[in-house]
Length: 109
Image (cartoon, rainbow, N blue to C red; front, side, top):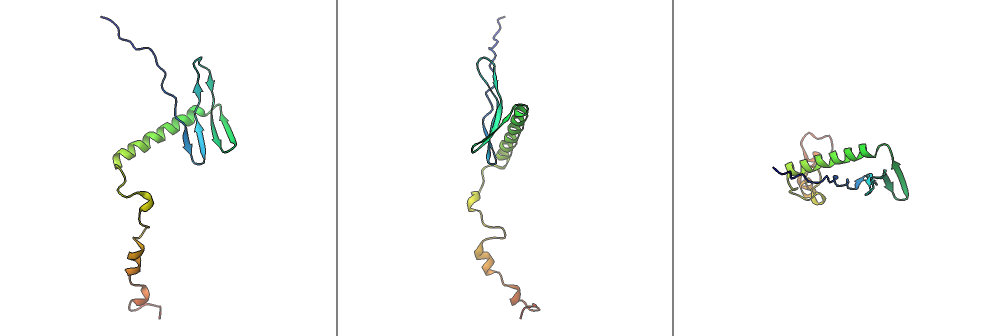
């Protein structure tokens, strides 16, 4: 029997992720194995995460998995979010409703 072992390939690096206004750039390893710490950046600010980059990368990865799983379960949206009617129906439906002033026994005169 011959062995068909594949050479070890490191997993692909975590992608950058938008966290509100901030952009998370996870740690990177170069070919020599040296590690550049991950960081958060927003406009001209940069916060190096020398001790918590891997924890935040795990968190971001898990949140992305949950979002992907939910998207698969729900399917594509039936109505684009930017064209959804306001809560309570359309403005035309609101205009057709009688006001409380038109009801018998109303406190308004």
